Amino acid sequence: MKLYYAETLNPRKACAVAKYLNSPVEFAYVQLTKGEHKQPGYLALNPNGKVPTLAISDGLSIWEADAIMAYLARFAGSDLLPEDDRQIEIMRWLSWNAQHFTRAASGLYFQYCIKPWIGLGEPDEAAVQDSINQWRPFAAVLNNHLSGKKYLLGDQLSIADFSVAVTLPYAKNARIPLSEFPNVARWHERMNELPAWRDPFPIPDALAA
Ligand SMILES: N[C@@H](CCC(=O)N[C@@H](CS)C(=O)NCC(=O)O)C(=O)O
Image (cartoon, rainbow, N blue to C red; front, side):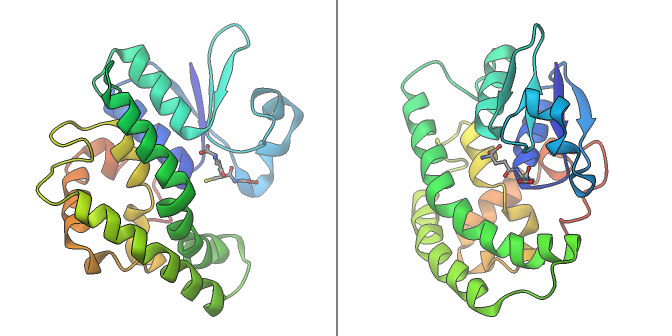
């Protein structure tokens, strides 16, 4: 299997899970700034022209980072995706995250990390404020949920943790007000105890602090 990635937000989840599980993947770096993800060969694997993509044998490929994490967890027979009702809870968190928590935080990630990286100029103050206003209520939901819990499912680490936490390694550079939500901050410190989470990419992560 070949995991196409760049050192950006969504590939981070897939790379971290692949490293955590020691999955038999070959990491393939995609240079976004050179438009490699828009070339016909890559578009045949992922018609969205985005990273990550997991190319599996016989012409089959999976796109969407959450789906790639789920595939890798099942491939490994790992408890990161338990084979029981907890899958419903995982789906809930993945959906909530895509629609709310990470959607809001990625506005800050874009303004403070991606714009300077690709030379798009200064952060837009109105967009920054809008993202923070959207993020805080969802961070409060997460903060309440994590009270007394190690991970989103309780004691069990799952792909939901890898997904929901994905913007937090960039909290400092993206100015995400993480310290306002101590349970979320503690949970992310726990994620940081995992070498695969701290250092998911085969190359250095220029965008995280
Ligand atoms: N929903 C997709 C989002 C993928 C995505 O937006 N990837 C970004 C990097 S984090 C990308 O490829 N951006 C380049 C582009 O859109 O041209 C997923 O979860 O995999």
